[in-house]
Length: 155
Image (cartoon, rainbow, N blue to C red; front, side):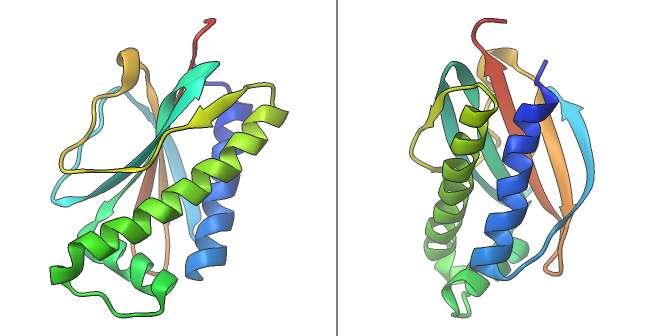
């Protein structure tokens, strides 16, 4: 079971980084534990966590929402044909969130590192059958979801 302080160590950077780099202030609607990821015609960008825990941080949203976030980050309108540019921009966003989360997780007593970001064409399998905290966020550009998986190795 994921510790609440570990989940909070990821939620704080999500809110802060999205607001700082995209000018979008999301609000947490709810957090729900799930055992599988599902993705319908959307964007899924993930960064893995490794070290004292395995897991990852995954951004999941509909393509138009991802395009709007990427456009706000770059200051450029991005079209449907520019999917690679959108993915690259969102990969950088998730990488920044993960980097900030690692520091907070360390202060909470969990030493982890991150893997390079990946854009998924379909929902990735969760590591070792771990549960996922699905964080649902409302924002001015639409619904943003983050799946947070932190499975401590010693548990």
